[in-house]
Length: 147
Image (cartoon, rainbow, N blue to C red; front, side, top):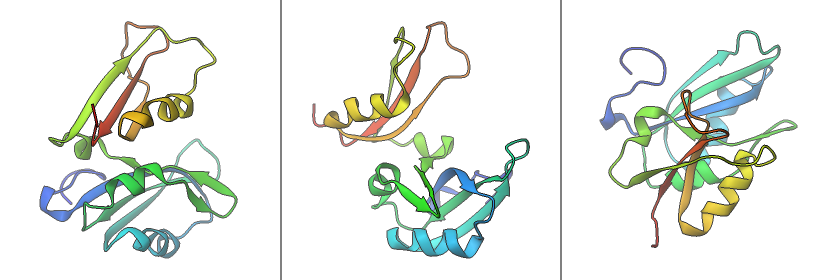
């Protein structure tokens, strides 16, 4: 892994960002959990400054064929349920399409968007863009679209 955390050599496999982990989670627990999806090449566990007892991790898997399952499954760590996300570098692959949506009502949340768009393909990530001219905008990354 070159440069900062999350950057990778494309030949290393695929790296996921795992936010919201409990502060008590260990690298061994994260490794053991993600072995269900393939060979774990690397786990980098980081304390989330300013977020109390929260941590996040970068997990690199050698295989790319489990990408959809990793991103769509809910991952359980103790009493915390969370989703793994592709790193920004991993989102820029040929079969991944980015969709922008905006002007959404205030009550619409990322999980509702994920559910609505999952009928068109695997939703790999839903994010609020840092700079958006649209009120309540989201970006979605999908793969294996059927339309």
